[in-house]
Length: 458
Image (cartoon, rainbow, N blue to C red; front, side, top):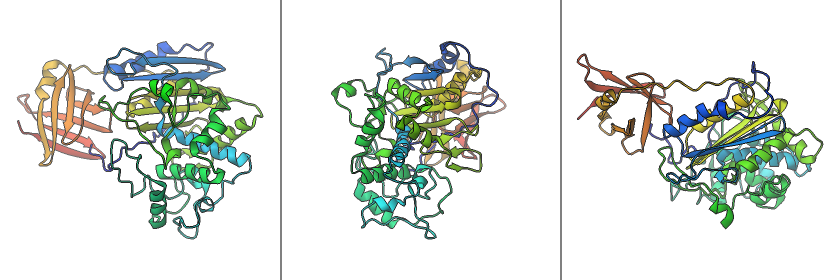
């Protein structure tokens, strides 16, 4: 449960299997709320998310569904014009900008990145193989997930003070640990790609976004810098414990995750990705869809897009300190889905994948919910020592079991059985171990392949 890096894993990857194979035929009309409600309501009832908006496009029809609140306790429901940080979904826009500039003859995918950097900046090299723009767009550059000199002054806004100078300093000193061509997700690479585009065009990343994508598609609310009107529509951020979080600023690595947008605008982007015409932007979007690299597990990469094992679903998700987003398009089925939430929880990606399956015609049933009697929950309350420095404090609040680790936030856990519970914010589980007389003096934390016992100390 303890984070291994001082910065949140802002831009995250969900391993998505085939979404299309074996799905039912598309039904007439577009009214999917009755199928989505059973999946959406538990996210609110279990305190997983404050609120979220879903946009679905299918066969030239669209549907927008909103759940929860924009501000906790306000009763105000989000809508298609509510503004969210989209996090790493920004990488899809960065990949599209690469495709646009390739189509315009401004650059080539096999151009070395160093071609666009100042002459004084050194790029890391291994085996005399230069890192190219395509390497950055497909996460095959060999660069790490984050630069090692990212040491935020304010962890609540961790990228705000990371400068281009620090980026150059890191590149000049870094020794690659792996050769080109092996996929390893890199926020650093996505940010560096956006910066290279800036230097190539002689314009800021945000201006490129507006000129080449947002303005042509009528995405009036998609940008990085919010004016007063947009800021008034910005959904306030919440962390996974539903506590107020902070908006993030990502100036030097903007291409990795700095964009803000709305559901209405993202539906416009989806429709453009489903178009079949000869417009230059359409051709650039299709170029970004093309498979560029295939991993051993069958997943693949386009320019910024992840490609599911079915070979036809393009997707990406993203998370900042108080937001989570999901985007998927299936051009061959004329289907696209976006989910925007102002809560930083990976459950939104799981939910987004399920909504995508529903939009494709599949039946998706909500996970069964196990009910534990209040007296049993009460018997688990206490302090469990896993080590002298690491204690799990278990409480019951509003009928839910809550667990707080030393130095961390308090999170709910959810029942699989009377004794087995799981987190939704991290991949971890807890098993309570009753004695013969029914008293619980021990629990076991299951995480990252380890089973760590904790002894009750109260």
